[in-house]
Amino acid sequence: MTITTDRPVGALEVSVPVAPSMSMFDPIYLGIDEFGAPVYIEVIYRNLLVGGEPGGGKSGLLNGICAHAAYSADTRLVLFDAKRVELGLWRDCADEFVGPNIKHALSVLRRLAVVMDNRYAWLDAHQRRKIVPSDGLTVITSVFDEIAFYSATTGTKAEQEEFSSLLRDIVARGRACAMPVIAATQRPSFDIIPTSLRDLFGFRAAFRCTTPNTSNIVLGHGWAEQGYSANDIDPTNQGAAYLLAEDGTPRRIKVAYLDDAQIIDIANHAAWIRRPQSVTA
Image 1 (cartoon, one colour):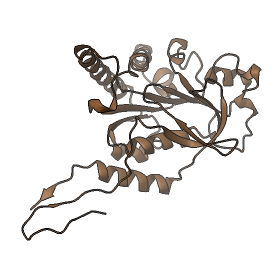
Image 2 (cartoon, rainbow, N blue to C red; image 1 turned 90 degrees about the vertical axis):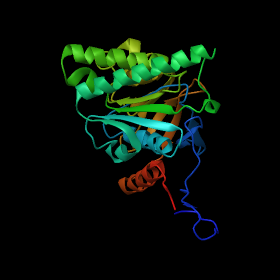
Image 3 (tube, rainbow, N blue to C red; image 1 turned 90 degrees about the horizontal axis):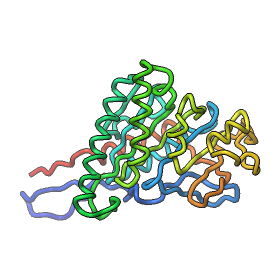
Image 4 (cartoon, helix red, strand yellow; image 1 turned 60 degrees about the vertical axis):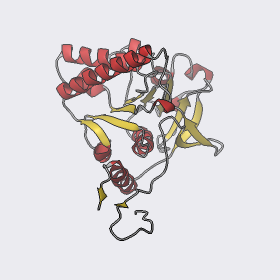
């Protein structure tokens, strides 16, 4: 759809894409809580770790965040998906899409580290501590589906360690320079995600886990003993999770679900919006 105005013959015609006005600086809608109230999360100065058994609903949460990011004009998406099909529908909206290739993953992470260093140099030169919307810099949102493939499955031991080290650096330093990370895995144990990396994620989402201990690994030590265990989630209740975010206490939520047809429609529209718009005589 385009908007045109009455114009004299021979004047320029400018096509203006019609789209929602979103920003990664805005709260992101995730779904509803157990009382039916809407649930939002602000990830711009945070990082989100998502864990749980296969089929629990992790991809639904990632797709919701990708949809928000794709419709945000101030955002550039960097996607890591070893299976290529979980986040693959957002490929045309992303500046970079990494599949099952650890060398490609390492190359992209190294480039992100350089961008991060440049942004901190800019902040330092302007005597600033973090990037804000009025700075006009884009948010670079990195989304990982199944970290384990890059950190523990493919490549050499040295490559896996470099991946974990580079990711740890971006998670640790990326928040203030508008480079948030959303990462998902089936089991964020120490052999998959080193504790030094896992503890840097301020926000957590635990979908159904096989044991209370696994739930604690996702949410943090001790929450299962206080009654917040993702092991209690019914296996048939896909999309249900415990979210540990701003209020500091896990809350039960139900993540909004987008089916493939809806994702394709949103992604196609978002990709069209992101294309450079030409001005024709």
